[in-house]
Image 1 (spheres, helix red, strand yellow):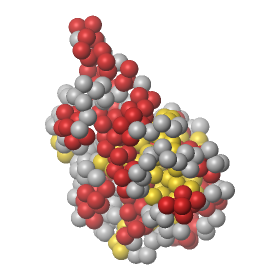
Image 2 (cartoon, one colour; image 1 turned 180 degrees about the vertical axis):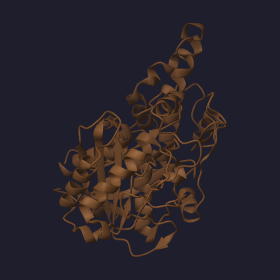
Image 3 (cartoon, one colour; image 1 turned 60 degrees about the vertical axis):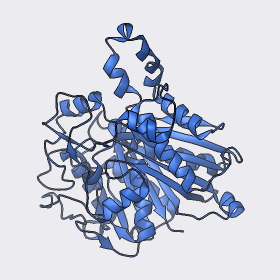
Image 4 (cartoon, helix red, strand yellow; image 1 turned 90 degrees about the horizontal axis):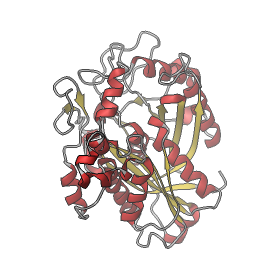
Length: 399
């Protein structure tokens, strides 16, 4: 990269916290947010557990202090909360004072609302305002409107790697000089469509998810939003900014293997990690912690594990853990919320535990970190893999 990419702000909301600090406290005290379904209207209540944020849409609107006449869906509301926190954390007073953009991502978009009225819009004219909100790009534009941002706005949707690709796109826009700072991340709410879809694929567990465990049964879906503020080194110097970390390497690859499954030999994940490491200029042994994608599905954990062994060698795989046992799999928001967690690990020299792990997988000798671990951390590698073979890796560093 031609220009250093500094991270100066971050914001998050998930089932384990309504802001970054609450998320951090839950992580270090091993408090997960997976629970029985209370808010989502579905006939699967009592059958599966989700990572629900226990706030209604009305409560989110009230918290934000926006008009009740809005047509914002849940994904949008969560995104606004996290993006606002990131901007405030970055100390940005005049958002249009420099060349600033927003790259948001989502997979659910506005379907959490539109799925409710799909067959009855004609009988509910007051709900027709949500039709326009179905589009994935609507949430990004709404976030920009609330922030008062007049600059570039774009939306990315590459399934569960979406937020990682939003972060990459933002970095490229800064590196090329198109923008000086970019708000990047992702947001996704729970919906019947996604719950039913993942259930049809038979990769949803009826209990708590157990990443990288030999007896893993599948994932818990969750909802969240996570955003970062990326700035050029010039902006950091100009405003004397506090830097939370640097994005030193990234890559997106596609193994072109299957619509929903990762390749058996981990080709996509391997290439993503390999290319990100090459961009960063780091050696394998420089990576202190891997925030794995770790969905607790049979296919993903095996494929990702094989890829890590291919990159590092079985005896030299760095400390790793999946935080999805805390939050559930938050789809397009996963890489955004886990980017925040990666930065928290850097800042606090701490590795968050891989909850619920009991038995190592029989295919390789890899055991995740299962208790809070304190160690010097200078570089964190974070993986996010999506349907369609979209494999993305980000590397965050202290300097």
